[in-house]
Amino acid sequence: MKELTVDLGERSYPIYIGEGILDQIGGLFDKHGISKISPILLVTDSHVAEHHLAPIMGKLQESGYSVVSHIVAAGEKSKSLGVLEDIVTTALQAGLDRKSTVVALGGGVVGDLAGFVAASYMRGIRFVQIPTTILAHDSSVGGKVAVNHPLAKNIIGAFHQPEMVLYDTATLQSLPERIVREGLSEMIKHGLIWDAEFTQWMEDNAEKLIALDQEALQYGLYQGCRVKSIVVSQDEKENDLRAILNLGHTIGHALEAVANYNELHHGEAISIGMVGSAKLAMKLGYPEHIYTVTKRILQKFGLPTRIPAHLDTDAIMSAMMHDKKFKEGTMVFIIPTAIGKVEINKNVSTAWVRDVVEQLKQEA
Ligand SMILES: NC(=O)c1ccc[n+]([C@@H]2O[C@H](COP(=O)([O-])OP(=O)(O)OC[C@H]3O[C@@H](n4cnc5c(N)ncnc54)[C@H](O)[C@@H]3O)[C@@H](O)[C@H]2O)c1
Ligand SMILES: O=C(O)C(=O)C[C@@H](O)[C@H](O)[C@H](O)COP(=O)(O)O
Ligand SMILES: [Zn+2]
Image 1 (cartoon, rainbow, N blue to C red):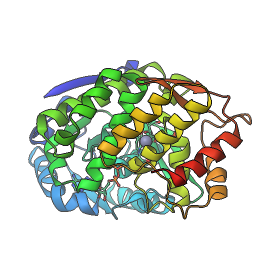
Image 2: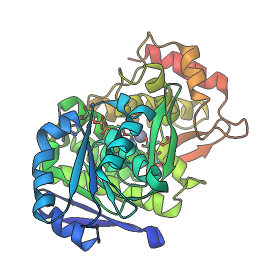
Image 3: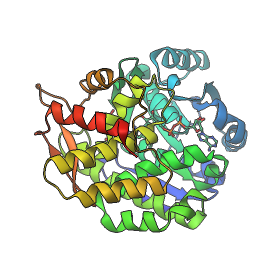
C-alpha cells in the first residue's frame, strides 16, 4: 500500500493507494477514530452499488460499524440540490448525529455530492472518500465539494476536507472504457501543470493505463495525487496557486453546462478545454509546440479535442462568465507556458476566447 499525506495542519489526512486495500477498511476506520456508536451513511450510485457496495457494507458491519446506504442515480445530474435533500432525509431517518461519518463510495459525482452533504449536515460532519474512478484521484483529494446549478457547475458548495482517502485500485477493473479515458484526462492535466517528466511518462504508457495495468495505474494515480496534494497543501482555499488545478476548466465547465450535463463527461470537457488553453497560449506568444504536444497526448488517450458543433457559441461564452475565477470584472485563464508549467493570466481578452471557441468547433 502506498501512502501520501495532504498536509493541512490539523486538517491533514492520508491518501492510501493499493490493490485490495478495502479488505482492511474496518482497521483503517478504527485507526482514524470513526465512531462505532453513531451511524455511518454510505452514499454511492447505481452503477457502483452493483459492483462494490455489498462487500464494503459487509466488511464495515463485521467490524462493528452501524451503516446505512443511500444509492443515487448514476450520472452528473445527481449533483443537484434535490438529490442532496433526499440524502439528508435518509441521514435524518437513520439518526445521523454530529459524531457520524459520511462515506462517499464512487466517482467524482458521488464524492462531490456526499462531501457537500457532510459539509452541510448539522453544519459539518466527518467524511471519508472511497474513489472508484480514475478521475476521482483528483476529486477525492483537496476538499472541494459541491452540487451544480442548471446555469453553472459546482456553484453551490464548500471546502470540506475528508478524514482519509481509501483508493482501492481493484475497484477500477469494472470501469467502462469511456470512463477510464475521461479519468485519465485529469491525470494528464496534473502532468501538464506541474511535471513535464510525468507528462512524458503518461504519453509513453498510454496503452498500459487504458488497459488498467495495475503497476502503471498505481504509479499514475500516485503521481496525480502527489501533484494535487502539493498544490492544495500550499493554498487550500484557492486564494492563488490552487487556481492552476483549473487548467481547461473555464471552457470545460461551460461546455458541460451548455451540453445540459449529459453529453460530455467532465474529463472530456476538460480535454477540449485544455486544447483551448493551449490555443490561448499561442495568442499570448507562447510556442506552438505546447498546443501540438497537448493535443497529441489527449488524442493518444482517445480524448475529444473539438467542441461539438451544435453547442451555441453565445451560450458557451455566457456560461463562462459564471467561472469562479472571474472576479471584479476580470477573466482569469490558466495558460500553459511550457509542458509542465502554467501561469495564472488576467490578460486574455473575451474576443480571443470567442475566437478559440469557434476554432475548437472546427478542430480536427
Ligand atoms: N472536487 C474536485 O476537486 C473535483 C475534481 C475533478 C472532478 N470533479 C467532479 O467529478 C465529477 C466527475 O467524476 P467522474 O468522472 O468520476 O464521474 P462519475 O462519478 O459520474 O463516474 C462516471 C461513471 O462511472 C460509473 N462508475 C464509477 N465507478 C465505477 C466503477 N468502479 N465501476 C463501474 N462504473 C463505475 C459511475 O456510475 C458513472 O456512471 C464531475 O462532477 C466533476 O465536476 C470534482
Ligand atoms: O481541486 C481543484 O481546485 C480543481 O480545480 C480540480 C478540478 O479538476 C475540479 O474539476 C474542481 O471541481 C473544479 O473546481 P471549481 O472551483 O472550478 O468548481
Ligand atoms: Zn476537473
